[in-house]
Image (tube, rainbow, N blue to C red):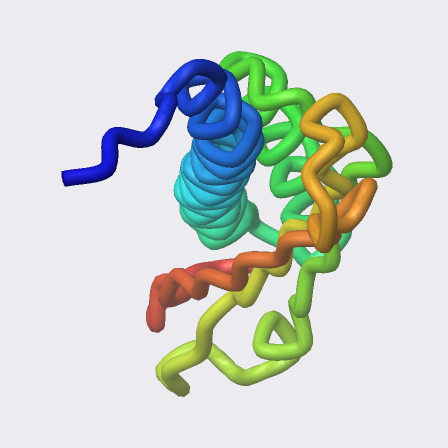
Length: 140
């Protein structure tokens, strides 16, 4: 039986295993950050849509929606930059008695540059859209 010298095999295993493990951890962090940010944007869009649907006119609805979305994102401390809030208030023009809704789309730029994982973008824009019904019998 021939015995081979196994000196250096642990170093070789570490040289192969450590980068692979680091890449795996980086991808898990990327997935977690993306999922957490998307969930926060959904919450912000729902808050904004609800705030807008309670307004009496389209101008106030847009202002209230932007304030609610920005406040929600700021309170959740998710690290978004370039927050954009688009409010569709076209159903405010409908006559009382006709069902309508307000739709809000919230998007933000998520900075991922600190991950330094090959294949992962430096930043990613995430969006979420939510709607809330208008009071059918509202007065203007």
